[in-house]
Length: 91
Image (cartoon, rainbow, N blue to C red):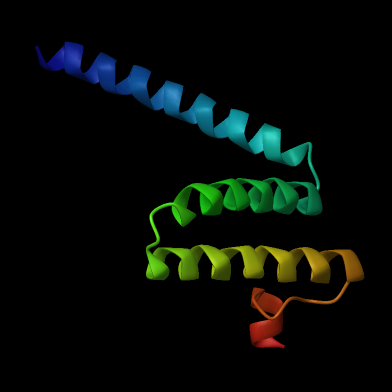
């Protein structure tokens, strides 16, 4: 029984590794601004759905996430570090 569990664990680990590599490859083909645009679009859609709930706290956090994406995108396109990036915090 233990042998079968070891085989199952090894197979699961291999699948998880393949999933991580697929995700890395998908992101490696796109630039950071492209990824930020995709995240911004997704957050906009989430906000539209959340607006129906009228939960002010939820909308606030979504708005802050959208703001952070916009700031990161603006800094990426202008070549300056964002106020939210690690480089800006250190430097």
